[in-house]
Length: 212
Image (tube, rainbow, N blue to C red):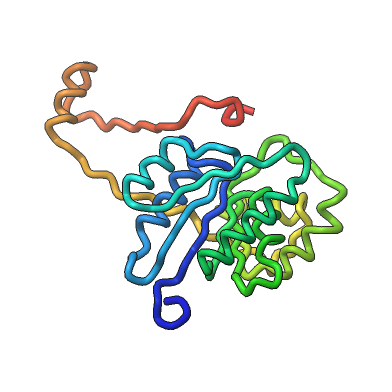
């Protein structure tokens, strides 16, 4: 619960809420938290909401979009800070590195707690000279730094210079699937798969980053 017994107010900051793994995780967090205890909203900084964001809007979750300008956008920092103040946000949950930087700057001096979740890394990973100067300070003053796997945590240590002691690994949860036996039988028949044969499948979006 937040201050004065009201639901804790959480602002999730991400690039957008299109189709993707990070977006699904945010959706599950928002819809999975009991609304009597938590009030969630989502801010997209790429200038558009996306399909999963529209799904959340249909669930009466506030999803807004701001368009960040090329380079570092100080106006975006001010806009986020305005949202934190007007919505009396208790926690800003930043998903991915860039939203973290903007959310962290916006929250300075506001009393809003900052959570950063790193959802993965691009390959090949690389060093950035600014990271060694800035990231240890940002991490030290962030209330929780989360990696979604041990490999991600190691990359954050090696390439982002974030101390291991500041990073907690929390694996992504997966919503349980409901099996429809009638649909299963129909698909097996269409594909010529015997009923006693075990079938393994996977789903992912076709995107260049997945094959690098």
